[in-house]
Image (cartoon, rainbow, N blue to C red):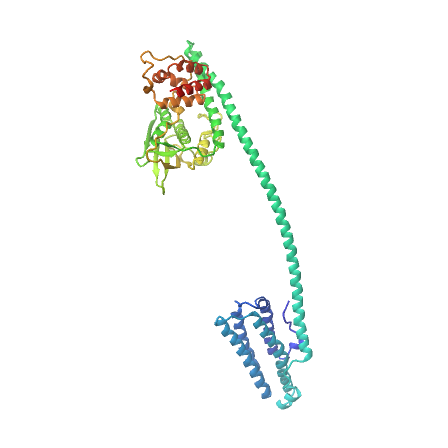
Length: 557
């Protein structure tokens, strides 16, 4: 909607003048919305608007001066126009000066000035000039034209002025109605938006309730799974221990070579099945056991040796070269989750030995610089085995993913070791990765943040590692203290670590506890009167009662 509409009252009949007047009307209509909104504030757009007004004045006034001189208009008309034009220029330049001086140019001031000029100058003075020009064109002289064409009548006609004011009022009223309609539409949109916000809020609250319920149900399910796993662990391992024990008994009997071979196959298959069961249960526990574990002081060199020595011994039996190295800059004592870290290192070492047929396996620990009192250690397990194709490396840490998934594959397993290791690494704030080249070997690395232990901290005994215990099938145990070892004075001959190892094996219902007793005369002598009961329970695969016997004995010491 325009502020002022071009109409017949504004037409002078002089083409060049009317064209310039139309340009001024368009300028006013273009600027009016901005001027009206910013009537009381400094107008940032004043500079370009003022520049256009200056250009308009220079062009338009010269056009009218040249026209009146060429047509011979009466000097009184020319003098009045010069005075009016000079006044227009003075007002525009005053506003330019105010703008440059930072005094601001208000929108209402500009709007009022332009509207007055359009209504009064064009409808009055320019129409008087046009009447003079038209009279002269019809043959009148300047004096006659001035009189006949009312050269001194400079005010707009009543009708033209009324129509101009009515047009302005009509346009402004229409704009107000449109603005009111727009405000109403905005109000309706606002109300609708509020309804939408309330509806969405209700939906989010409902979703939050459902998520809380799902979380609670998941927690209950997780607790139920934990209880189920505990029961399954006992129920699955108990018959397997019996199978392994009785297969061991068979192997001790005088059997034919054929039956002896069958008994050995039963023992190997039973051991392998027990390992698979343990892997599955350990993976399930690792997935749900994300809470922070108590940190204990430990010596990195001792931990790496404890976790990997037994595995590397198996590698040496395969003819592999093995090596354990801890860099000199690794701190002597650190705080960490010893059990999880040992499990990861042992898994990586087992994989390296398993997939390496010639060459060697190397386990290293190196320090990486970090700010503050935190240390970042990198554990590396490198082998010269079969290597891993690039397209298989990304999925290698997925659960139940196997490098060789064929039914007749050479390497056995269910593909949980690396998945469980990465889960445990994440629980400790670390990262597990690999670099590998098919046919040349693999390098698995574990980056882990650790804190140096306080001065004087004593490293705790390391947990027993199954890989450091003999892996022969369990046999019926009949143990008595050696005659050469008196029952008194033998306490110092058995280390606390051996007792901790035995207790850990019994707690895991591990048949290799029998081998610990049988292969350690010092430990057997130390147990004294508790030994026969413990041996009897182990022989009957009643590991729980054997554990109770051991704990009771330790409390008495």
